[in-house]
Image (cartoon, rainbow, N blue to C red; front, top):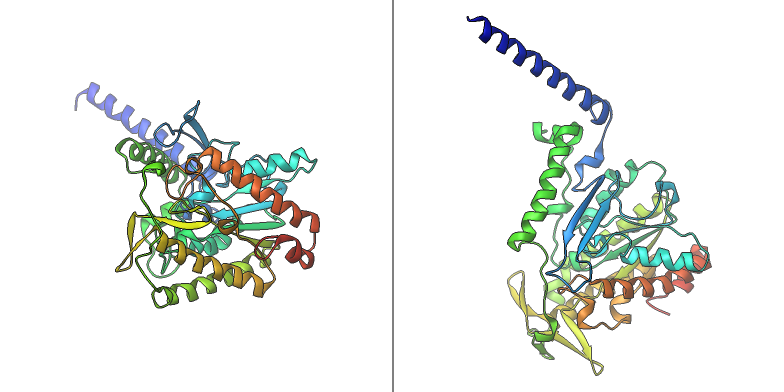
Length: 379
């Protein structure tokens, strides 16, 4: 073997050893090989700020927004989890990925409390696509892993993502802890390098989806056809099983929140699949399938209200506050950029509405009084 080739191979081997030692050191320092790291088992962005362009979603003087999650996967303005007074849990309408840091409805609530001299901290634990299936798992895999997290209240913003759900899927699904355990699952739980690459991939994928139109897209509500006629006459048989199972999950969430040392609060969700016009509910002519049954926007209204009524009923039975925002509010076209998600204008309205209700609850102080102050469904 020629001396030059030997030297090149030697240099290559030395560099590989150095890189290998660096990877091992990084894994031992930042990975979870020496400790359990369940945070990596959830579909969370952690310790990242991502720039999103919202110009195709809604009008804004500054369409480039910053979306930040801290090392625990939370959004919000606070230094340590011990400062959090209200932890908000939900799906994408809680997460608000297309709303600027500092302008989410949680930020609006926190700012209003500050204006009246109350340093009340609201944290955002929304996960895009997550339903009550995932909310239940959050307590075991996520919240319990966050040091010093002891919020006085946990606010569940629920309904829409449970409309179709029979079992947890997508962002609801956590890595199984029984049965077979793959190399990929082990890396997901333990490896810092693997999860760094996964985060980078997720950021790239989010940006790519926006470019090719797979992410959230805007709906021109002024051009939507509206109807006062539902396609179905009855929904009881169609929804019975899902409603019963949804009620069971709500009871589990109440138990989980109380076991966590927190007071649960539930809030129902509005959407722009329907509207109130001259006191009459109209639904969009847009149609979707509920299992094998076709429904329009007015059917969706009647069906989601059945889901909301389950929420209200369970809350009343368990002595828990339910704020029925879906019924208690009226919205305009430019409050939503699609059928489900709010523009900054709509987000402000959500924040101001919830602040007024939450202020009553905070002022009441005790759970025995909260039921009277928090409203069943609205005072």
